[in-house]
Image 1 (tube, rainbow, N blue to C red):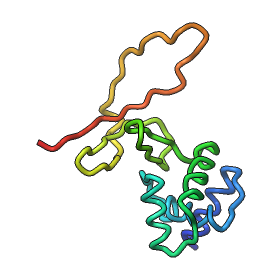
Image 2: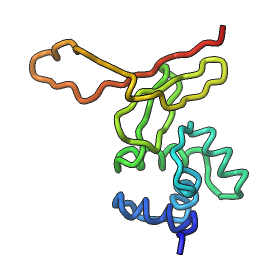
Image 3: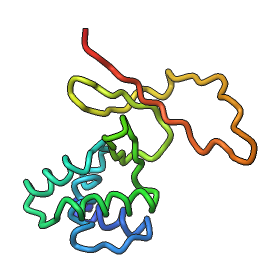
Image 4: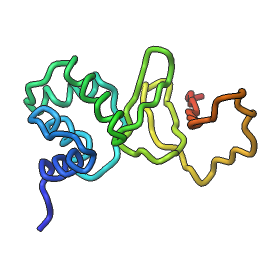
Length: 138
């Protein structure tokens, strides 16, 4: 028997150690209910929740996205100082940012080669490297 989207969402939350509240399940369902990866902003997730009829505020969406990131089930990608996207694929991979559409998509990982990084300053280590490739139509 194939699990429905609410069961998938609930399992995703429980596996992350998060309590599956009604609001979390509603948002998780939109993020992972169909088993596909997504790139969302808080605003786009809020709009999708409103369309679905889920009773959540924009503040709840922001708080929930932060909790999902802290639990390790979402990755936050900052495209510029004012815009964050949230990715359900938490494995290291590069992204394309489509400037004319304001859209983030996965870029092919197998084509990215980083040969050398600068040495980290003393007393710190490199935690991660985020690669966002900006695209502009010609």
